Length: 87
Image (cartoon, rainbow, N blue to C red; front, top):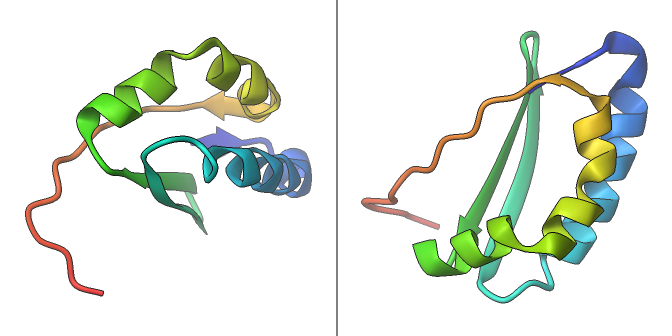
């Protein structure tokens, strides 16, 4: 995801507000915000594809994430299936 250089601090503040809400949603296990020279990578882990799909299609999700959509310049979403995970 790309965000204009002048909007990065606001984007990070807004992401933290959204993340605080998302962590309370059924099935959400964790979220991570990463950044490199090309932009941001947001990851989230969910108990199941069904839990993620329900969240992603919800009106509440659309409403709460509006500030992030307003600040981004481009975005691409992919879903991946975890094959193995080590803590």
